[in-house]
Image (cartoon, rainbow over all chains, first blue to last red; front, side):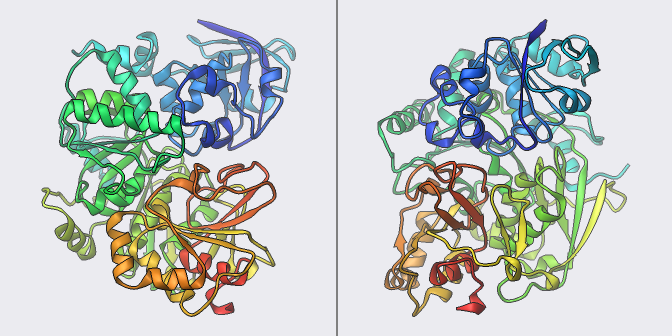
Length: 162
Length: 419
């Protein structure tokens, strides 16, 4: 599986309150959540984002609340993958569980600029920056998580137990 | 190799004698928690599994506390959905308005968590129960659904940071100041993926309410969990609140910690976290002149009885500044009643403060005290991110109930000694 698109770049500690403010959490509809995605941090996000685009963050991406609405909103906005130096652990877990591809890569997080054309190969963890002509290697998922991802999320994975 | 408290609890719940950091395990769960924001998504995911029963009707808690009493029609629909699910499944620990409280104050008070438990909650502040010597951590709705179905969850065994606490904190220094100091020291990702383990003879000088407040904010340093060594105070609390069997885990003497911090509680000063991260801390003598519009005293961090008492001690015979709204929110019905019986409400109302029914409400910008553009609040809550309590251009300053109450009187961030 691959993802390709332009990078939309943010800084360190992008928190779940700016990804999807709590005032919109009286619904769990993905399209409705997506319509407010990132609005407290970047009012232009929804105008900028095209289907397949890649979000790039710095350290501790997704810190804060356990709201699964955050990765749901990002996924429903059309983002195909999030690259960050590190992810907050609940956000990391939630993304795997709902099938939003994410990848940790210090070099890519630092080097990719807003608007760069980026391609990611999830099997190898290789990230190619076509604009800058550079290649980075992300941290691949442990086997166990790859099984959850290939089962299309945690619910399908545990369905087999019943 | 020796194991930490967290590692021992997880090993035991996975049926293993030994675990090492990085190892993936499946652990049995003693409690699975969700609220009115996260449980609706979990219910939808649970339905997809296609089973008719939860794993144990006694080991699930559904606590509608965030947007309750329902703030609008959509919230009412979400609350209705989880109530119907709780009734259909026969879930014992469902709490309706009038019995409900802020989840992380409510569960320990109801005796639903005891030392040695493994708890997951679809709420990031689930780490609060580490104060009881339990392993508890926040997860998302899908993990909650899987937990309700299987009674198990997967975990990566975390490394740990040790905090050795010594000495006795000063008069106006509370657990909140200790944890804000620590977050300021290590940063909002300072304990990312790790356990924070609190030990040392200074623990005896911290009440259970102080410890709940500290474990509660472990997530604000990125931690997987925060956990306190069990002592006499813990056991006294447990005996008073629960009849559940418990187990005390102590770290091995040769347990490995990636880092150890020694903290002398007697040296700490009241501490305030400035916008927009909990790590932006300043001691009270360095805050400068910050005028405020609102004060919130409540939440899963600081809505317990001692918090109410210290706020009342400061507000007694004084008036809330004419430009300030001061909203006091006891975290549970029990705390609310106790505050009323102790005469604290007379003090709050005479001072010109509003007293609310238990709710998370303003902490996450839900309702019951939202900020307009440019407004500033001092809050005893746990997060001060952009837009957390209202308009993206509003500001939240995190502090203890003592600082919050003194600030309400002064109309600016102030210490009790200044008023």
